[in-house]
Image (cartoon, rainbow, N blue to C red; front, side, top):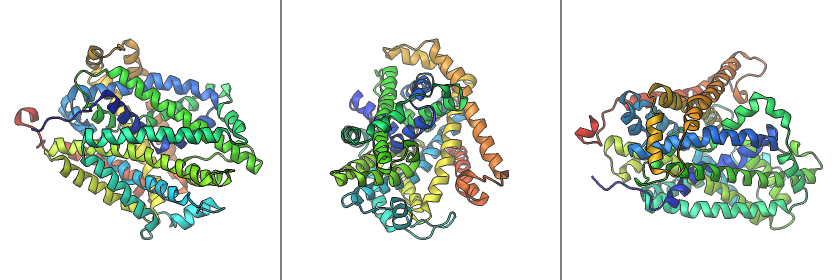
Length: 503
């Protein structure tokens, strides 16, 4: 067998882990979530969630990957052969995400080019949906959108090329370039944003605390949800990455550095975004709350409006902003794809090139669906359901299984403490065995009730107002398919292992 790959340095691993956490969503999800849930007061439940769920879960997944030296499927198989399907379920969720995620990166690349001459014009909303995406009705494909297809091909060519090179010469090297570049670019954007007229108004809206919000359970749930989704927990990434760690690696320190680095970037994003939103509000003579938007609307509708209004060098800052989105997305896409590439290598004994070609190639072909005129609708439904009923549900199953069914926390605690400076105590087991399952359990019950009851709500209807048929085919069916695929994969015999390992 070839020598097992590993990170060249500890810094290389941390950059890769942080790169997987800092994705497109961090730039727009955190600022909007904080603003909607108490402003500055939101940082209290956010920090609490980071320390009681985010970092403890990172430590657990780092320990699992490091102890068993395998991707998620084989790690779970080593835990107990009857739970291998959970590892494949996580890999299947990652595969689904990797089919639509590169399309958003392709949009960012396109908008990087559009920024040179502010091609979006005065009506940025009409430009995005009508001129660029040429959006079709939900459920319709409507043919390919060439303006999305070309940058999508570029995104996949870069991502698969890096993955083909392996861990040190591909993933680690790419993140050593991407992450520092991303941070420098975003620092430049933030420095420019805070010097704009009205920036103080935006920052006041972002940081002004509403302590009354802390009495609302939904605010605390939102904090846990933000931490959970932003750290790339529970869909195989951190288990896979930590499997490449050298045997003498400080697990708890790595987890704390990764968690706080990600949160620091989210705070930086919030400062930059709300400074710009304050500028926009002053230009329109309205309150900041009237220009706040979430999701793609903030990145591809509101921000082009803001960039167009910049008093100087608007094209340059447009290029920097959308290039930062593309870099953040690429680093995350590479980490997501690595989960199933390594899983396939271990399961079938394939070479890395074959696993990249088949696994990455299949994801690239599937992503063409989201490059059609109806792609945004398919993307919106798939993203919502695979995150809520894939990633979040996986996290709940994972922590209950490890803490209560298999009772592996003491064993993992011993493994981490043997090689780490920050030793784990009872707080770690309480966080994972009590706090996290309760919060995630509440989140999942609430989500299921919300989405099932919407089927019978004739006034408000389904998520985003989609029809029952579209929601089932593009949402529920996608989330269910990931679970079924995981179960099916667990029944296939391990071909990449020796007879002794297979037994």
